[in-house]
Length: 594
Image (cartoon, rainbow, N blue to C red; front, side, top):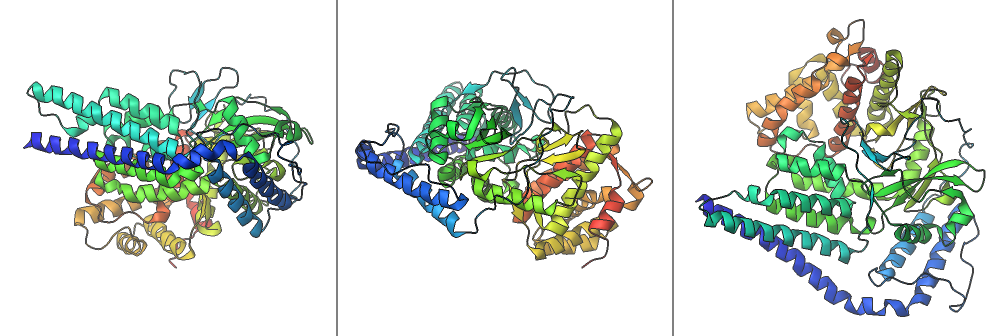
């Protein structure tokens, strides 16, 4: 019986790989005429590019970078046969026109911040959008919040930039993994064994293939890896955890030629000479959708960081996620309680947000306004004239990552108190949150005595009704009112009312634990000692049961909210913080139900 089941699973996976390959061939056939005509349409490409640039220039009040020229005078880069230029131009033009129709970004909302000298503690990072960075003197990466691991050399890898290229890569991955499953399965069957499909799928050779390919693809592949890696590793198959770790620790960046083409398409030809006196071609940080470079502006000689999005990532989100969802569903190696389809749908929304650098610039402006009277925080200035849909230039912050600085305990307490305070204000007062839990997004500047905030691509609003009910859930947790916590959880959509008593109790237990730091009896001298907390361990203890018995996925808003809140808890624990959580909760949220 087990042999038949394994054979059926193997056949199912091969059928999925075949579907991906068939789709690749279909696109190749339908694109053949288009690809063959690309080199004959330089004039059309140039004209569309100039029109798009004129619209963008009008938004920021500058002269167009491209003057009217004839085809003879145009100096365009050779069109690459493997890039869908027409699609890029159409999407570029339509998105810029849409941005022009919206309210233009202000360029003079705040004065240029005075530059500080580099902190004497010697930060190795000034900016980050990822869980790993590249040391400027050694071109290696470090994983934030993890134990030291052997350093690896950073490598270059061209990003597959068209849907055709990306589908081909996923299809070839599925085919190679499937063929290896058949090969190893046949050998084991011949030897009298009846292997499980999961064992065949996650063989050491396939783990290597999958990790290498996901690292090369970036974008949706890395985003799914990041989201799954935030789950408790003990609940994921160890082979999946190994893939996620290797993908998260990868550090690949675009070759110089691809970088030049990508930035030129956004800012125009000659962007280096027009905008920068210095620009470091080797990025110091890399993330799922882009890489980050140090630079100095030509105007004002200000130190900045430049985020450059990988080409093709934004345009391939849907197709990438559909392919990944199909492969993960076919493998059947993840717990059903993860509600993979809902997780992928959430990743789809977040990725599209993070790929929109115009949106991120607006988020930066919005957070600056929200925190303008708060002396504890600093938000980078946006250089709008050197930014576009897929390039974002910002003021370089001079602080040190909060988990890397050699700070005394009172300073650590102050940092954690303000980060926790910001989380509560984002939930209840702003109803708007920067949801990336990465500790590298918080720097501390000892000269200005401020926490510097980074990476605003994953900001989101929360509906007023959701905030009201969620705040009532937190109040019930602080008061240890289990009946109210269950009622409000049902109102939010955590529970349907049809769950087993064990599932309901496990969920309510987790809610009670979430409110523990703000409970009066746990705050000695009105302060909670995170060095003694066991919150995360006790929440983890219930996750296994909830994954097996949950009848409905969690509310969509809580995916990102709980990642951020749990990140704040873990940061406080890592820094052994002792902070006035009870007073903070009473002042910012209060104990009275609404």
